[in-house]
Image 1: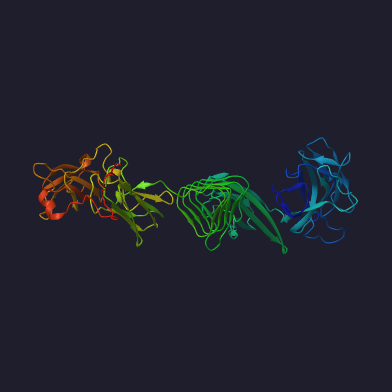
Image 2: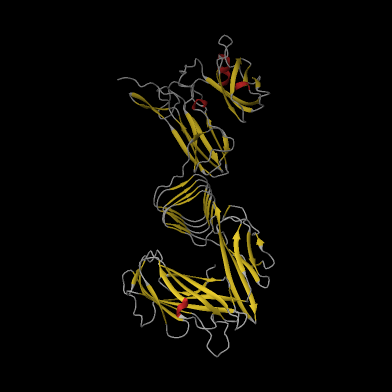
Length: 597
């Protein structure tokens, strides 16, 4: 059996009508009637809870005696009262009665109005002689009911609600039905196989989702051309014609989809929404909004073309918002965040990623900040001032520090430590560079560090690597040794050959140390390409040997930086000794020790 189509309804109770046979067949002649039965099931919807009912009336359209049959009538003759019956699954007792006019039946509780809540009513009509014309007949049902314990309207007045059922009458001998699927549930991306039976002298149309009707009249099995991604209802619409009249009946089946994709024109979520796959709301040409009363947790990417309203928004993937984002609580974006409109959050919003210590140059994977610092050592030893710099997008910033400023205030002398820092904003995809300018070198060097702080969780990018603090300052485990002569520095570039390189000093560079002293100079190296790490394995007056760690055999390039003590001859030719005392008002890289009173 198949429920008939409802034309109109404003009733408090819920009614369902089925016919037997399905579909109803017209009588082949007035002398050879075709008989049908109608069954109505009555219940109270959960949204209503309880309804007080005093009367139900049903009208079956019947041909008038002495007049030709009508395609909109169901019965050729008025069914007798004995053809009607009513029963309840509860303790209430109902009785049928004949109404005014042919085909009208009245059903009332035996003891007066009753409350209908969890029980159901079953109304049956049997032995209905169907007339001879194909068409559609409207069966009308009226109810006198009120919600809860309220009194229903008087039965002598208009009903409280009306519902109409369209009962199709097909040609005699016509059959259609058994609309089934090979499985009630499919996986996301699979296709079901639908099948049915039916007479050949009819039109069969398949309707589902927003697709146009598909003519399947010559088929009895069919699968949708595209795999299913969400739970889908298929409707098989069967139509037959005779004598210029058309009868139509619908069969439906719903196929569940495991882990379905979500597609909705309007989506209202009253509590929390956990979306473990990609979320796309609307398109750039057809924006749509997403509003949630609770939290939104997106396990992958989230793309909203309209406005997004949520209490809490957590996106594990990239989030792209074409309009406004309104979050009354916390918002967490583990991936990239792209917003073309305004961002408004009533709670906390975290955008800064983890700081990464860097050196050299690179390309920013996200928007972010470069921070540089140069400071006076904490041990109180004297240093010469240096200048650190950062550059990106045509902007260069600098900071000076790491030394002392000496002043004279007779009769006392005093020295002030100097520290400096800078912050440089860098756009995503822009190249950047950091470094230090040390016009006069102290050993060990002052503490210098550079940091990259991304807006998000991106890294510094561009092949930049974290630089240990010891790249610029003396190791805390190796105490500084005061040099006997003034230092000098020089640098260059080299490349490994199967994990090994020999760097030789040229004629233009003086010997780093006296022969008697041995090669007492410091070598700093920065790899410019990927390798397993570098080590200086040998130093001489003429050069030094560099080898890749862990037995590596790469051909990586590297920059090297030498800090050395000059020989007496070299000092006399290249530099002049710093004065121990300066004129009033001038600064020095090494202050005089304050005198005691």
